[in-house]
Length: 586
Image (cartoon, rainbow, N blue to C red; front, side, top):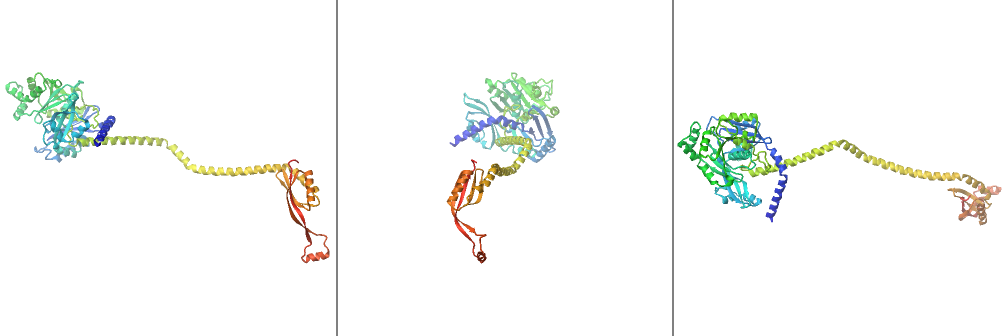
């Protein structure tokens, strides 16, 4: 179950990477600041290009001028680091990533065929170095090797795929890596020199369908022969005996190299070449018509002419950067003639001035167009072979992808921050205005509530005033009636009735309160009111006593008796009443 989940996750990861690869790959690609560098015992060659314009902008050769001929990078790594750092500082190349050209003789190159398998299975299998042994004659100590593989061709009919396998001892380039790091470079790509040259040849083929070719390298350090097509590479070591090497160097100084003696030299040298050509004879994809020749030697005309005379059915072409000798009978394949790259004027002068020093920049130019390119997007100059023999290649690729992803996320975050900041900046005046409004809102609400409360109170007062005003208006409107009531009342009161109070209630009725000596007096009073004023109604009637004082009728004895504290008044029983009179009909 776990294995299935892992497969699903891996497939989803590949699909997601495939969708975003164009964007992420382009970001990573154009952030790579690179140079190619080839370190020799006594010198260094460096090349820098503008990948967008396919232009060589800086290329140079620098000799270390050591007086001690026994000095080498293994013995004096710090000395080499200091020398290279000084050169890089002068050329303003410190901190660049480096494509390191390593000798082809330091690696092993194999072409093997294996069954086509699922990508997840393949990725898991290649983690075990012993996996490769079952498909070819390989060293027993593969676990101590840095191994790079590239699928060159897949045949679904036969269910087989051709694999380019390049390997070398893990510790072989540790010292070189330390030297370059201490010099101020970041070496992330190690490419065998032959692939730097082969990639340039493939890139220079103008035909849409690349033609197969052979490549021959000879010199004191590098000697091999390779047959190349888009689907396969066959690599042969072609060692030269010391005595033959002396003769090859000597023939460059001679005007005539004809004769059986020199013919035997060529025959011995061509043994591996002829064997390789006969091995692929009749194979359509290996119909070889050209052999490209590259050498470290300054003079190669006589040697290449001699090879041409031995193999007349195949055309030999020397690989050069510029045509140095227009009268040369050898047809060279030069980069300027192909117009594959542009050259800065200063770089062109540097190459031409270095020609007499037996310095060749062909591999440096080819290697300078290699990129780490973790998302494998299309490059300005397509490299057919993507060999990287760095012992930490997988880790570098993984870390570079993380770095690119982080850069993209940071960039997106910054863009959004700038966007939001701009929006905020544009709206700052409105924000300030709104902030003031918000700050004053509470005060406004409080003031509103206070005003609203005052309005309610005032409305209540106004309502009361209006009510009282209407009442007063009605009362004032009835004042004549009330006055008439007051005037009429004395004439209507019988002798047995005492009026204590007359109250005018609203505008519809009046209220009489008083005492009656008898019911007869009260009835008489009610009848008079009804007849002369309006409908009357006895609302209350209670028993009460009336105190009557006898002022004016007292004798001298009574006055004396009153002075002695005795009362001169008496009380009688009466009726206390309230009469309501309806005035609405008056």
